[in-house]
Image (tube, rainbow, N blue to C red; front, side, top):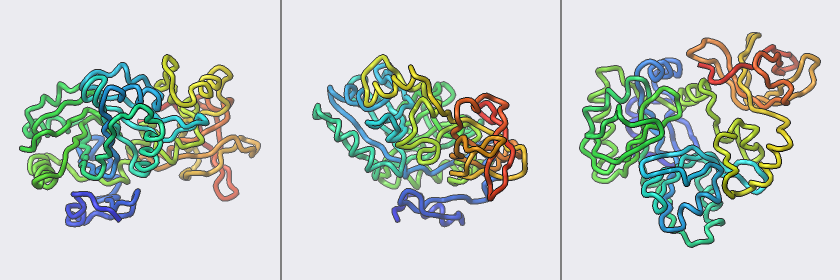
Length: 361
């Protein structure tokens, strides 16, 4: 198993560890509910250094990104980031990702899911017909997400960057905890506010930044957070998780990602996805709350009142914020409206649930 530069820190803190995307990663420290509440109400630190980062450079960089991603990266100016996806040849999704514009038309960073690094790299290389300079910097890039309503105020003494002035989905480079050339981004996967910081672990930078974070934030309640709470936090916001809610067989339109699918440009499988839009989708990713007692799990069948299969669960959990069971799943379009009654098939039982608007919390 691979390690991040913070693995020993997690072990020293007594984190419950487990394999994830080939890495030994912390699942929880003080417990998922406690960590979830810390991020929703205060601030927490996630080690997400297992994520992948690719640098694309040169005059053809934007053209390549435009051809392989669904969103319109030509709208990006230096210091702006964008959520997007890589459609495959059949109109499914290779991966979802973030596109960072470092230098307009010339230098971009793509941030991809840990489990898809090799797959995404090969996919983009396959479409790199214009000899764009590509660098996979995943193994040497550290990434910490400091999330929560109090995160930016807590971290401000550590940097010369005006964190409160960073608008959502913008970023800048600056000094952080005495480490130079840190990319500080107003992004995250929790819906709770905060920043994500990217840097290289040179001259002990990782340890220096981690220790500085907890020296200043620890007395104010800053906590280390594992992947367990990362999942419950993102699910409460209705954010998709690759491999669960989206994959090679789901279309961006079905997944509610029409807003990042721009038909004003050419991209992989555009004719297929555009035809789907014109014909109308047959299933849709929806949020639901359990009415009956029980938790819906990934791949459970969703049925109608008569017991006929109408879809499947993609994600489900007990929401720590709402204190009720919630989930995401694909259902036939006629069952996708808010307040629609659906049933989750659990061991020969039909548990009642209802479709709700996202986000949950």
